[in-house]
Length: 150
Image: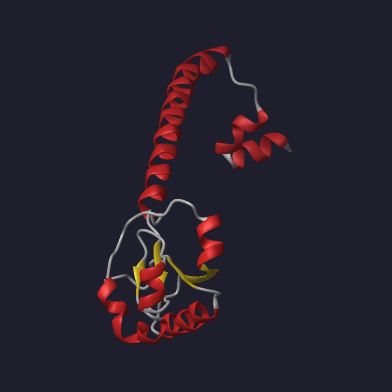
């Protein structure tokens, strides 16, 4: 029966028979070369994958202060953009952000940031977050990049 199967499916013959020393000696260098190429390809693929993920990862966060002008003048986080919460719809375009930009919105307690967040989401900004009040933000996010000044 085994011979009948081997005769019907010659490509499966290697599964049923032991390779001859001659076949093994001929195949071994080819397998070693292929293994080296696959290892090299694996390292290159890993590096390319890492670089691609770095390129597609947003490197900046936009911090948006939505308090009044007076509150902003009194105290604000360096590097944050400032648009009062009731002006977000009219002025957010000034920032020139893509709809997927990472935006962190804050005010004094988080209430106005919530209102601004809802407006941003209605406008299609899908990666915005209400991070609460300025005191909480100042202590949890000590270093902020300087990105925009409006």
